[in-house]
Length: 273
Image (cartoon, rainbow, N blue to C red; front, side, top):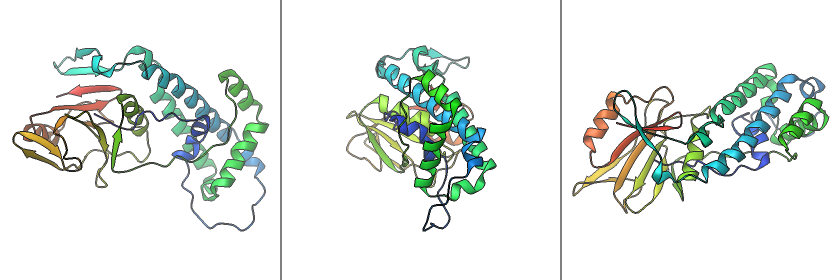
């Protein structure tokens, strides 16, 4: 199981995760900047959006620190009521409630988008000016940033990736999983480990929110991923957002490729089936 989990996001990344999964920049570019709209600058929607981003950033910093302490090869194994093996992140990590904070961030983003739909047509540099000015003038934001111990920095866009990604550690993979399942453009992601120690996450352009496409071959009893044939597969995981239960296609896939472990990543747990 792999994925780009923990790319340490700089303070801007967070207030700019704001732009990350926030606004798609569309519309015509203007030769001259229009003055900032006071209604947007003084809106509770913009304040709440920036505060949610800052809170998420702070929690991610703590989450990253705790995640780096984990030995992923020694996670506690439990079994659910159906007898399935389940591996959870320890309480020191899961109690930080990153998913809830991500949800709050996405909700405030959507509220801002609905209140000011034309905001999405502005250029990136204009978005940044709004964020900077709002942070500078808002008492609510200043108080929250002081409480969180955050120094203000300027946001940047974080571009998503598609296709095959190689990871150096499970820490990196776990961060990406956390972020990916909250992504508004979410589709199923596949995480694979190999006998040579490689960790790979893979998103096929044909993937949907409920289905992943991946090409696997078998040779001499070993299974190989089409995108990396240097070493046989040892485990295969894919993400679910609605439940930890495997579907008919999942069970068929396991029967077709039995010589590796199969699991589903769901709400910070790995459910083996």
